[in-house]
Structure formats: structure tokens, C-alpha cells
Amino acid sequence: VIHPSKLKSPYTQEQVAAVKKDVEAILKNKDYDDGSIGPVLVRLAWHSSGTYCAETKTGGSNGAGMRYEKEGGDPANAGLQHARVFLEPIKEKHSWITYADLWTLAGVVAIKAMGGPEIEWYPGRTDFVDDARVPPRGRLPDAAQAQDHLRAIFYRMGFNDQEIVALSGAHNLGRCHADRSGFEGPWVNNPTRFSNQYYKMLIKLKWEKKHLGREAQGAHWQWIARLPHMDEEDEPLMMLPTDMSLTLDDKFKPWVEKYAEDQDLFFKDFAAVFGKLIELGVTRDESGLAQHDGKAGEYKSA
Ligand code: DDH
Image 1 (tube, rainbow, N blue to C red):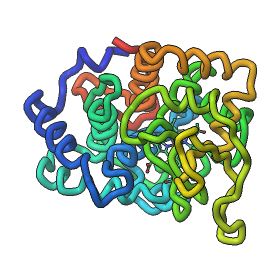
Image 2 (tube, rainbow, N blue to C red):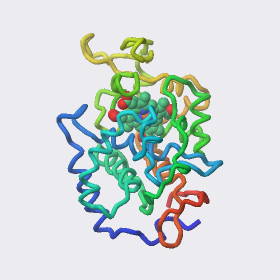
Image 3 (cartoon, rainbow, N blue to C red):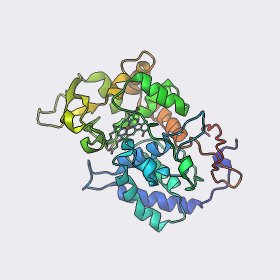
Image 4 (cartoon, rainbow, N blue to C red):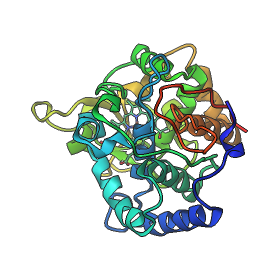
């Protein structure tokens, strides 16, 4: 498999730079969540890619299947319509870019703009998709579960234990919304700044189990904690059952500790693994365009 950096790009460098600039310009939004649409854009990039299955070579970001009810209406994708709507004016202005490329590029731009690492991104995803190629529902992780489930989901995509812990660090960003997932609150107290706080919070705080909403309305129990300076009225920090399971597993925990201590290592590993995530199932031919013949190749960081 030829590395994507060696292939023809369907866009010029100037075109890609113009889209990046326009994504940067819409990130700050005082009317949305914590003042940034960056986190929900990152989640869009992840959910568009995280349906990949290495065995059947199906799913992944190519095809932008979330435009269709079958994938877009998956309860796991609740709330991501906001991200897609935010990006629509950029798609209209730069109609030559495919949705599949725009969604992954926007995630990478948002991570960098929020203080995170530079992540390799390559174009060439196409928007060609038919019913048979939209991945079945149920491929994204269920936050109410634990480490066995994490392994089943992420091994299916081709990730290992270290990569699972590194990817989970994206929960430095954004928050849970009761009406989207049944969970509520941010993981860290500065959820629009990319850092390794998530791991520090996991290790340092005293977490307690709590139902913040009404069970009858679909609220799940979650872990909550407050920093020393926070009052009882302040919104607490949260962890999902899946987040906490990283500290309850002999293979995951050492990586949580390493990333809590070493932000540079986390940034380096996160950049590599997020770059791999958005390439899952994206195999280009010599024209530089991704194919839909299911012959996905191995992605190796340049
Ligand atoms: Fe996540 N995530 N995620 N996540 N995620 C949620 C929000 C965000 C899980 C569940 C949830 C990753 C892994 C997992 C982001 C990025 C990434 C929410 C809340 C749930 C629930 C949704 C809502 O209510 O709005 C689970 C389970 C896993 C897992 O099993 C490991 C990964 C790998 C990433 C990534 O980007 C690499 C981001 C960002 C958000 C915040 C979104 C927002 O709107 O803010």
C-alpha cells in the first residue's frame, strides 16, 4: 500500500488551507456549550471513523454514511447533527470537498486549535455510499459498559490496549448531554483546551457513583467528583463507566498513569492514534481517491 502522502491529492494545498481557515473561524461560539464547537467536531470525526471493522473491512469515514438515517439516526450519534449543521456553510462554500474529508479534517483542525497536537490528515475520501455499505448500528462503544466491551469494540477496529487508552484522552474535550447520551457534564474543568487533565482527574480525584438525572428518563449512573476549589452548587466533573474501567484494568492502568505524568508522550501517542483512526478503511488507488472495494490496507504513520 502506498502511503497517502505519496499519492496525488484531489485538492490543491491552497484549497485545503482555505477550508482549515474557515473551520478555525467557526470554532469559537459563545452560544454553544462551553463556548466552542470544537469538541463536537472532534466527536463527529471519531464517530464517522469508529464504525470500522478490520475483519470485514467495512465501516470507517469513507462514504460519510452519517448523512443517512441508517447511520445518522443511530442513538450513538445523537447530537452529531449539530456538528454537521455547523459545517454545512463550509461545505457550501467549498463544494469540491467531500463530506467524508470535511468531517475528518474539521476534527483535526479543532484538536490543533484547542491546543492539541498536529495530526496527519490526508484527503481522498469519497461520498459514494449505498445502503449495503452503511455499517450496521451497534459498532460504537456503549459508555455504560466496562473494559471487556472496550476491547471488543477497539480490537475490532485494529487498536491495541495502549491505543485504547490514548484515544480515550479525547475526553479532555467537551461534555456529556443528558438529552443525547443520558450522561451529564464535562470530564475536566477546561473542556475546550486539549491536555492530559483527563488522566490526572481519573487518578487524583475521589469519584462517587451518582444518578444525576431521572432513571425513568434514560439517565444512567455515572462517576462524579469535585476539585477542591469547587462548591457544592458547581457542576461536578464526570467519568463514564468506560472511562473509569481504564483505571480498573492491569493493562490499561499503566498507560493512564504514564499519560497523566507525561503530556508530551500523550500528545505524541494521541496524534499517531487519531491519525490512524481517521484512516481506517480509507484505501486510495493511484488517482488518490478512496475505493469502495473493501480492500483496505495498513496505515502507517509517515
Ligand atoms: Fe467519547 N463520548 N466515547 N470519545 N467523546 C462522549 C462525548 C465525547 C464514549 C462515550 C461518549 C471516544 C471514546 C468514547 C469525544 C471523543 C471521543 C459522550 C457524551 C459519550 C457518552 C455524548 C453527549 O452526551 O453529547 C465511549 C463509551 C468511548 C469509549 O468506549 C472509549 C474517543 C475514542 C474519542 C475521540 O475523539 C478519539 C468527544 C470529543 C466528546 C465530547 C462531545 C461534545 O459534544 O462535547
